[in-house]
Image (tube, rainbow, N blue to C red):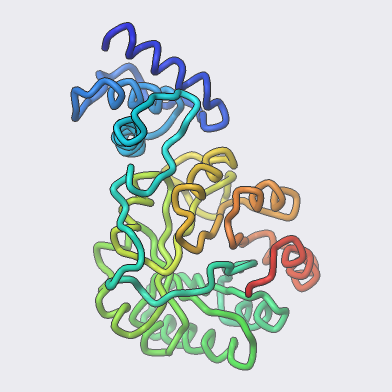
Length: 300
């Protein structure tokens, strides 16, 4: 890199301390896929800010596109235009069925009993995250969850078990990035179910966008002990940046969020906040649900 490129990289780093995470990589040579100077400077900067390789590569190309589009290079700017990331324009013919832009409080729950309990408590969006290798047990639990939300206003998503969700007539399915290679997305779309996808950074958000899901979940915002995360907690600074880029989608923030951190999460502009332990570990889950709901704008 030239001295000018190094100066630009340092200026980008200095202008965005709110996006920085600890750098866990060593001093390996940086792989560049382009010789364009802004791309190279931006990739160095993004890696120095702690973005993983896939996200740094995605961001670096977006930086280059942003500068070419605007005709200027301002280190204080940050890419947040869909076209700079190669995202598709809306509306789209291949999009999954839509869901409310404001999904509100989103309770992720371990079984059908909890689903029914939180649906009766007025939680607007619930997800059954039932873990079992027993196909019959999964089918029974999914059907029980669908029955549990009947007569309430709650929208029910089923985590992972997409075929059981279709068979039981659930509102939607939520999939992780690791599930995209095995789930039959055409079948889910044809059945009219909504699709929510997890993402943990820019590269995964762009991958999710290519599938035109109903909503995108972003996290983990804070540290969580519920599952082993490949990526570090992203923090609210990055959540704000993610939400600006993906603003055309209903967005769900997830990961270690509770009543104390709800305000700073909501300030990002996301229309939904997913909680797990904040509800299932609460001494009075119904009271906690009411408290959390009061902090979120109601679903239209």
